[in-house]
Image (cartoon, rainbow, N blue to C red; front, top):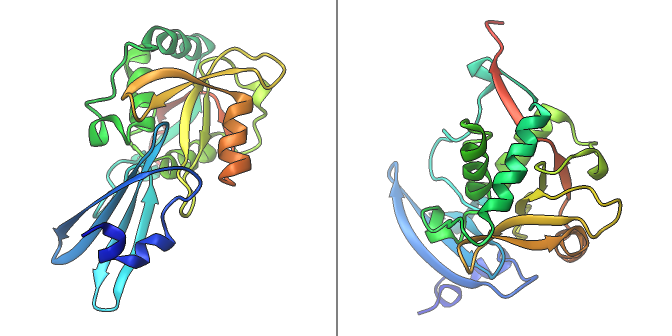
Length: 237
């Protein structure tokens, strides 16, 4: 029996903007039953987290990769960490690592064999370039608020150098994505590098024009731009 036959209400929450293959699994956590629905596409993929209740399914989360239970994948303000813009040399190092990773870097070790690895790939490429994490999450709906708290939400695309981040966070039923920007071109031909779900490989797979057409125009998601963050010990309050 298919997912939509067993749980027809799932159909109200899946991303209908593209062709996605659906799979599902049930898990027990803290004495509660959950259903995780995975939607796999050619470029991007995502998950839906439902609690199974006596009244049916209750949606708890939607992101590129979801977590059951308390979140431990964020840079917590309680840790007294201060976020700053990375040194320009570090941002360029991320860009150079991104270039070297094209068609070489495999995300197969990431979530769902690379299908859910868009944030995972970005953070691992940055870690290889910098020797430190720029995020601990694998979800765009978590990563974008982290970046927004650090930099604000009004950074213009032309002000973010090569090696910076472009992100369209998952919102509602529509699956988002994240990538690394190429050099500024002054028009919508700017190159973007990101994980390819179907190939589980790092690819040069978008221009700015194609990204905006897919994530803003078709999916109705935000398109945000950020430099690479660095988290430093802010000391006690």
